[in-house]
Every structure is written in C-alpha cells, then in structure tokens.
Image 1 (cartoon, rainbow, N blue to C red):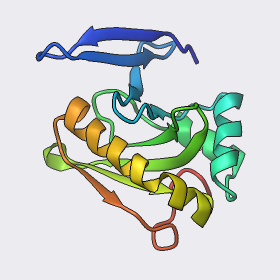
Image 2 (cartoon, rainbow, N blue to C red):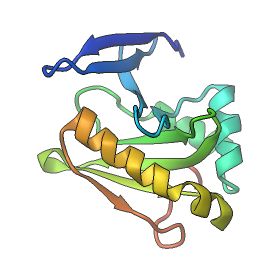
Image 3 (spheres, rainbow, N blue to C red):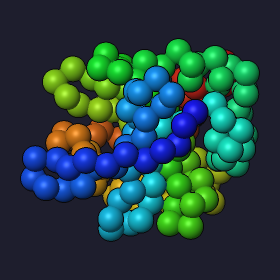
Image 4 (cartoon, rainbow, N blue to C red):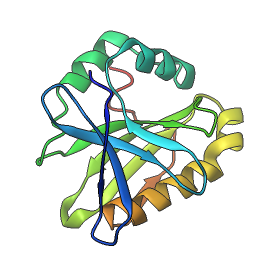
Length: 156
C-alpha cells in the first residue's frame, strides 16, 4: 500500500491528514495534537503485522490479511481496524471499529495485557474522544472489555 500523506482542511480551517491507497481510497491517519498519539487504519503490510503482534497474543496473520482485504474503506464503510500508537510511535493497542447509523462510531479497543492497559488506557480514551470530536463530529462509544467482546480481525 502507498503511504503518501495527503492534506486538506475542514470547513473550520482545521488541517485534516489522511492517506490514499493505490486505488485512490482514503483511509484514516490521525495524530492527536494534545496526546501526540496516532490512530491509523491497519494495512496488511509487514510493518503493521509486526506492530499488531506486539499488541495481541492472538493474532492469526492469514485471517487478518483476508479480513483487512475485505474492508471497504469507501463511502459505504461499516467496519475497520485501527492501530493506535503512542507518542514514540510504538503500538499500544488495536481497535475494531463499527460505523453505526446516525453517524455514531463504536470503537472496541483491547490491550495485550493488564500492564499495557494500565499504562495507556487513559491516553487512548482521550485520543479517541478527540478523534471523534475533531474529525468525525460525532460521539465515539468506547466499549472496553477484552474478554466479553471477540475482536473481529485479530482472531478466527
């Protein structure tokens, strides 16, 4: 996938940064100005797979690749998977994303272990809140439970 950053501006003048894939489809790339965390769409490139292996002990690589290739990141997008990186660029968690009716977005994020959760959850929640407010102009509902919600892209 191409990783060229593109830039335009929202109606209020705020800068909006995204990436385009080889087909010209936009996909999410957001760096929070306050936390400096990056939220971006997962791809099937080797770098992303290595990052996901660091945040999940249940990653099924082949299932993940097939699942990501089925994501429609066009106008009719219903789901996605995001990688969330801290201000040093290290992955801290992954998130399954569901685009609901009425413009709401449900984000289910999960951490590899309780240590990651304790270290990063507060900043991840703050970054997701800022993303919803700044980019989507909507609320983001965070459902936080590693055990109760099965990730849709990480494992079969």
